[in-house]
Length: 74
Image (cartoon, rainbow, N blue to C red):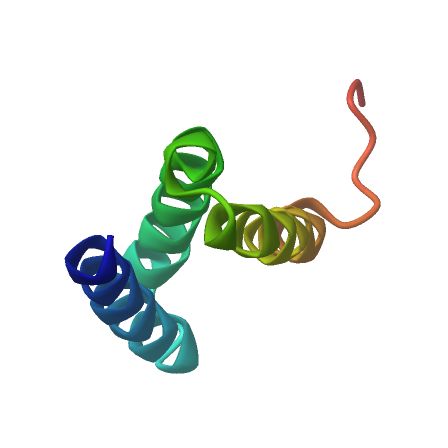
């Protein structure tokens, strides 16, 4: 579990660098990593619960920043 956490942490840092440089690949990789973490959090109990809550919050913030107040149908 520790090795998997290290891989996720490294990928999150790389995605954060992409976001910091305002690159779309950083945004896309953050979304993918957030979704993968939410799926795999069940297998990483008990630490996965906290990781899932924080990853879910980060995922919602990323989607809010990207889509903001845009309506579904224009």
